[in-house]
Image (cartoon, rainbow, N blue to C red; front, side):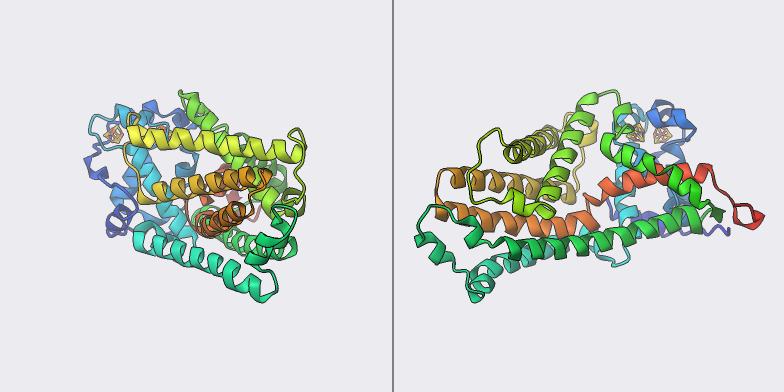
Length: 381
Ligand code: SF4
Ligand code: SF4
């Protein structure tokens, strides 16, 4: 493979966060501190070297930035205050934009106007759907308010309409994310290394992907286990909510008030607790800025936290108003909930913060595939 040096790489990367990696004089202290270095990586120093040298292709073929869970040990120990942990975070944003073929990820990460603009436009479209589209189909907001029998959620927001919309949205998001993951695979396995991995190895090692998604063992290598725990609760709460809302909506959005011990309610309570616990740790950490991992916050970090918090709060309000038989408050909360949830899923899952949830386990999987790779020219399977 030919190696091309691209001097403009540094200025490109600076757009994705802080970028003072020229302060690094390669003492190697961060590599000695990093828990991932045990596994044979010269990490994170080697990535800083690639950035400084403008080795774009080699950087884009790296899996290491996805293995880093930002424990911050490297940044704390750096004698030059080069903040290598934050540099890895910036690199993850950069790589996300490189995998994304639409170019939207780059726009969202480098321009607040683009991200806020998209959020506002999608939020307005959702509100208009409830106020204009549904009434035009015969589902009147005001009619349900005067109907007998308290909150008529399924009449106000018909299951078949919401479910159809959910599936369409999931199909769009999944297509974008899968195509980006294929580009990630191409850059890591195919293009850069000129490697060949047999189909059997792909199948045999697939369990790593599932295991790393579910348990996040790399994160647990950090000394401070609180962040692994809060991140795990956040991730599991969000995943449960996503599956329940998209795949099992008719089971979840019921007209009847079910007893408190019913699995549907217990699952909802667990997911809400997971979300709130993870959000609480992340928001307090970023406000206090005591831990090095929270010293710098990119605008995308705050937007993600704000949208997820609003989604959780409006979801809780729907539940409270519904079980207390308050139709108007329930319907307004429902519209607000959807106006936050829809743009959050459409923007965050394929283009921004939530896509990291997919890229991380895939990076572990691809790293394992590389271990069993053989040069393509050799002709071996
Ligand atoms: S500890 Fe700081 S100066 Fe030393 S190699 Fe790491 S980033 Fe560079
Ligand atoms: S933040 Fe932690 S895991 Fe990431 S590079 Fe630094 S020491 Fe390693």
